[in-house]
Image (cartoon, rainbow, N blue to C red; front, side):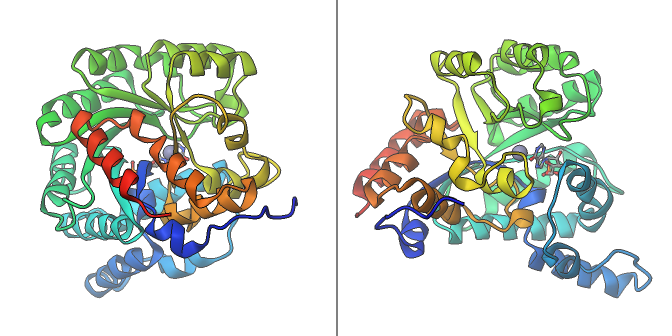
Length: 345
Ligand code: IMP
Ligand code: ZN
């Protein structure tokens, strides 16, 4: 591993740095402690519950990979957080955690899902209600992105877009494509993303996460959806990287997620953030699933300072590079610009 670079940055500074989080999956952002609280109350009403305590399951020094990671949601966390109460409790907890970490603008994303007594639309409504009622909403305005899962059918994807359109006025700003990158044929989602765009929604896509989802055909198809932002951008041919720059597409870089899940090689210092950082583009450092990877956004900034030798001044500038690609509109951009100008170094 390369030695850490010299920097004047420490954890207190990156905590106080006003930060913009644009790629955070709601369910993946729930801490093991919060899941434990949900598990404890579920255990009280159903003592025979067979699910393992989240503090046990998620605190183990586990190396997640694409095979073990995605079932964690479908066969574990979704079962835990399926009632109205647990959805509300966990969403509030996620909002508070981001705020406590010094996030001043948040775009949360989530896949509409149903459980007993909660339809997909109810689920979206519940999450939006939490955003509305959150007492820290002025200090941390929060918008919602609805995710299409790669395993969805074309009509399920359209259902997500229709929900996004219906709830635009309540704070849904975009549509995402996520899920297990080894699954699905992305070309079936063209109509859904076209409709989203026609209705003024922004588009962000998980892009080139693993080699299996990085064929030239798949990446070209995804670029044809006209994304405003791309997440991960790992296995991208250099020529296409220049095309991304030319199109001024914003980048959501999730360093700890990539390193811990072995999506990239060589640790933080070798992360492709190093390629993009000196080019003219909008970059947002993001957590992806802080509940699982355990690295809050303040820590992502600390990591890049330590591994790429960035100073306090450069971190303030880096935080500001996310502004251009937020989905929340001009007023939010101005507010964020003003906050960062005031930031003391
Ligand atoms: P939710 O959408 O709020 O339920 O958050 C969990 C979901 O986000 C998972 O089921 C995945 O589909 C998706 N997700 C979380 N992390 C990743 C990732 O790194 N790549 C692709 N999809 C992800
Ligand atoms: Zn993601």
